[in-house]
Amino acid sequence: DLKNLAKVGQFREDLYYRLHVIALKLPPLRERGADVIEIARAFLARQSARIGRTDLKFAPDAERAISHYSWPGNVRELENAVERAVILCESPEISADLLGIDIELSDLQDDDFIGLAPQQSISSGNTNLDPTEDLSLEDYFQHFVLEHQDHMTETELARKLGVSRKCLWERRQRLGIPRRKTGVASEN
Image (cartoon, rainbow, N blue to C red; front, side):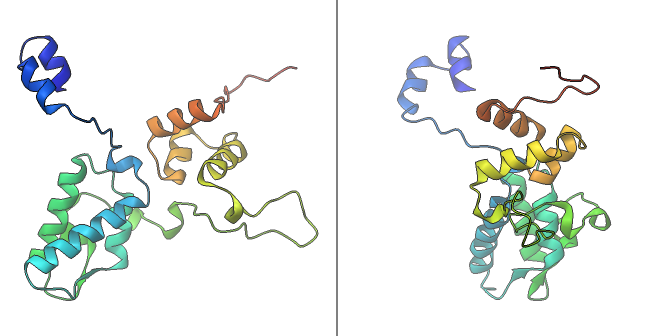
């Protein structure tokens, strides 16, 4: 953090203010949800064009691995993984093993994340269940958390929503959704 370094005298303050035109706060990849695969596709397009292999695409297992990996090295790690895969790939499809990320593919299921598809068990006579396809992302988040918080841990909720626990906590704060206390009965 350059601002703190400038305050303690480890970075020139005048240089900090010269460079500090606009501050952008970008969330880490692990909090970006479905954006991660789109970012990976952009890196793939750039790298494959650079070496003249415009036929390359991600195999389904690679897309699952990209979506489920936590990316501790953030954008640089993702970019390096895609570049590595492009260099090593001999077929038109990039498989997950070419990415070189430490993720157990056998643990990944297609249903690890609940999408915005309508609920499957809605009968025509049951009107108290709304299809989730009509909800905004924030409304879906709130609906999902309130519906599942009694039988899921915070870690499970975050994983199903495709966000970090910190992001789950921040959204709860922003939307005013209190965290349920386990083992405490609410009395009104």
